[in-house]
Length: 367
Image (cartoon, rainbow, N blue to C red; front, side, top):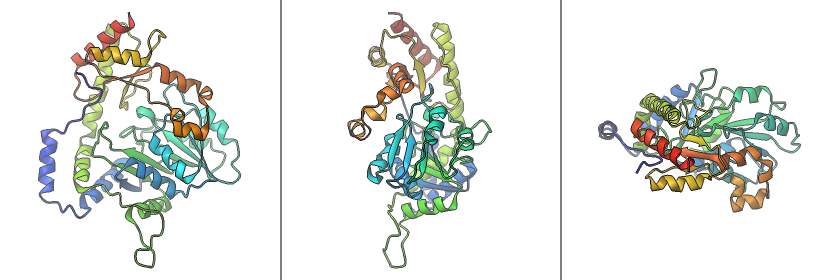
């Protein structure tokens, strides 16, 4: 079986963990602090703080900007549930807008939406670097009419990616903060989510949320908070994988080129959105003969595991009750959902695997 995703810990990584664990006090946060320091240097930002879970990280991010029920949060339907779920509890007003062909936010629609004044609260924009497709955040920032608008980058799928100016996603050159994930499918899979920012007040609020900062009286919490630390074992793994990140990126570049060569060989359309930051390899179907799920089932018969485009958030029953039936307003997003297939794309693959995938995909489409 060629699995869709595969993550392994190498012998080299195991040796690194064993060596470091011998000298680690697991009750302290020394490796976590080292991991945060190394990430601060990596992203070239002023402040970094790691949370144990992506859901908790988004709660902390919204708490840090004092998001409330008067505020408007603009986001796309293909953002993660982790970014949306806190809005239920905060009762902030979500506003979905359609995407580009790359599943990133539509600049034109965003600009139009921000022209509509929000008289009682602030505007917050969630910018997804979907599947490693880096959004031009600088352009969005320059075109803001309201300087109080808050830009939050969801870079959970863009670790190591760079803007056109060469700075890394996470540097917060043009935004208030960025969230980046260390989940199992990424190059760093220690678990946890990092939030980066260059704003002291936001960092203080994030740290207060995570570290349970007390008031004058003992055990008197200043604000909503948790104790969602990354464990020392996770921090050691994360530190090691951060050092290996460039190798992972080079491997992904090679796999993408192998796919392109195989598509040429079998006269399959090439990926017009190829970039070096992809974490999943998308294939856009130019036929109405098959739906992605039908092709997935046929490929499974050939021991190839693929995935469809994630379900837009407005299809979920709980969110649908909140926003209503709105899919007609998302023609590009709906087309992406109907025509995008994601192919295996992990470091255990080789050129023979990719050639086998392309050949079987070609055979199915030719039926």
